[in-house]
Length: 433
Image (tube, rainbow, N blue to C red; front, side, top):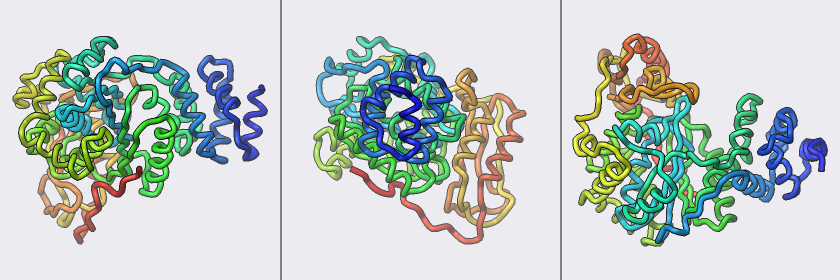
């Protein structure tokens, strides 16, 4: 079998066999296929696409290129939630404790942030002492005893994807639907969960910019998951504005805790409860409507918050920070961003809001960059809110006061102030199952 023939076949619109796809992924993994041929096939896939069967084969080959987890030692149904990434998206910190407090196991592995999107592991490491690296034995022991553990992806999951993504990133082939689906689901299926809820973001702060494109990706990933024997559902959720009011690691943890206390922002609370309801329903706890009520009760009676506190303590974190979020370290400096117009907050470039937070030190441009966990943004106005000249749009926080000028410039240029109140967009556009 020759890589030349595989590239030519796909270039001409042919359908690759399972064996050809396995040969390609194996060559990516072991380095036997040169980068220029890998890039050539990615470009051919970008232009010619893949059938559902080809995409499934590519996903499974990526999944099998590295380690796979065995959760058979965990008692009960295991459910996970995966987000395609956004700004202010701290849903895992709320959804997982809700679900675990209701008797469903959440054995979660999450990633770090890069660029404008924040990573769940970075947020957790804003909690003093929190250990995001557990041995397999300790991880499963904690899930069995507490129902919930969350760690970083320290294992060699889907190494083929790491190489493929690095080449796609520099050859303008990132936004290929089959390649995106195989990347996301290849890693997700390396874990051993029974049920998966996908939170597919759409809009200016997400990778998929339109609802239709998000639905197409969601359907493809749901079909792949079902082919692997998983119970699947996907929610298409709005990322044309940040989720909640907090952007930045410690600030987002504080907002997540407030939400578990029943005092969170309306939009963030709604998305969390909806995701939790679908996770519980897939796990057999009842209809989505029944599970929504269970989730609401878990927040109202404090059991979800208590589950989060227990998990933080079990993983070495300072639970006093969660019991009283005023104990979190504060940034040395703050800066108020004010409106120069009268009107309503209209369209915002959510990705740029994430980049503004990045400029303050809350994120990383490269994997080697260090994060300022106390840096970030608290929004004072969001899309649809009325505003006057001099009213505060946001407060910026950083330990580097020279960062404010750039961050403010980015945020103001990303905020449209219009004469008329914009039409309200839904938080959840649709369900794909």
